[in-house]
Length: 181
Image (cartoon, rainbow, N blue to C red; front, top):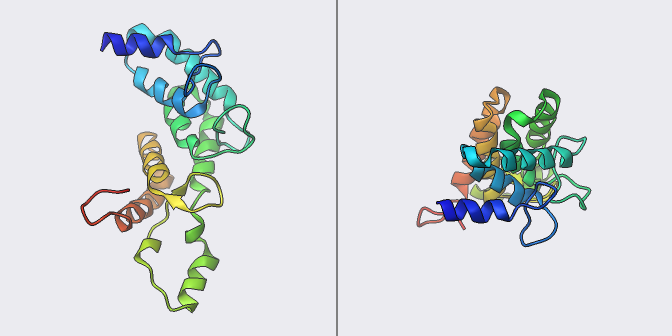
């Protein structure tokens, strides 16, 4: 454990973030590192620097980009929202919740459902409403599961119906062996 903690702390970039390899910081590894350091008193300063970097990357629409060089909010918003925790202002928190709740897979949009109905197709995979990797694309299991976790951990009451729908989405995509691919 001490060796893993030391390795993680030594991989932190000067800007407070973490990258996929040495060099520039990215939202996903920074958020995951911040989450991993939660509850580690010896890492409090490093964790705070990571939260500061995440906070600086937040976009006006309430989402987060994969890195500072990307001008679009994506699925990493759920991770950054979880990792930011109490470090987010109420306004930033509210904007993030609204951004997350405003995203859904294109397959759940009205016109796609109407098209399937007109074609006489009822596909079990179209049950529930999940979250996509990128806005206006199909929903996937991983971003859906992460967003459920983020909204539940934050205790977002307004998200409960959407979380129920997202769980339906996940169940409808379960493989026969009980797992997901």
